[in-house]
Image 1 (cartoon, helix red, strand yellow):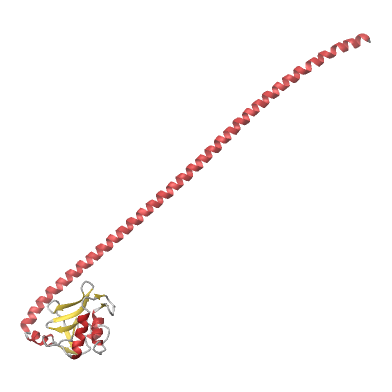
Image 2 (cartoon, one colour; image 1 turned 120 degrees about the horizontal axis):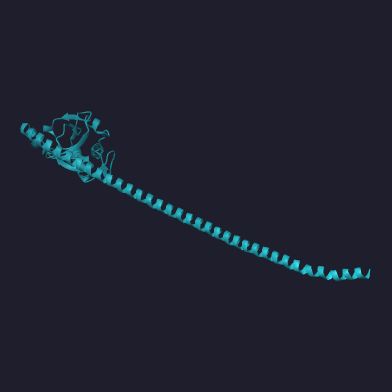
Length: 254
């Protein structure tokens, strides 16, 4: 029994000596595992940070690109609108120029035709000028004074004064100044009195262009072969010689 105990006692330190070695190896392996895990974790963290940064950069780039695109689109729209406005203004000015040119041509053509008709009328009715020189008096003088005071006023279709007229409103207002009521438009005005020939005119007579009852223009005869009327938007209220545009007929209201 003594020998057995001794052997057992001698063997015990051998087992005790092996434990630290195994523990050290395990610790070393554990440290290596921890080191590797820490490194991988650090690498993963760095990779995540890089990816996050890239995503932020990409988002910033997209926002900048969108903002730039919006700005470019707004500038393009502004340019297109400005161009459209410029084209519309140019078209308007061109239309006005064409309208003015057409009005001048029509006026010149009317003057030419009137001059020809006036020459023929003068040859066949020399008494017209003589009768036209009779001075105005009474109500006729009031009518003529009124239209003379409107010379230079504008012509506006449908206007009734005091600074703009159309042909019939000027005639109506002139007679109203003498206490005489006339219809508003040229058609009934051309039949409001006694029809008289152009060779027997007196100051204050109403001249009309077109057929009696369907006249398209009226004016006031003031004597001396002259008349005053609201002619058109280019001339306004003007005094003209009858040779400028010979009327179709005349009526006497006074």
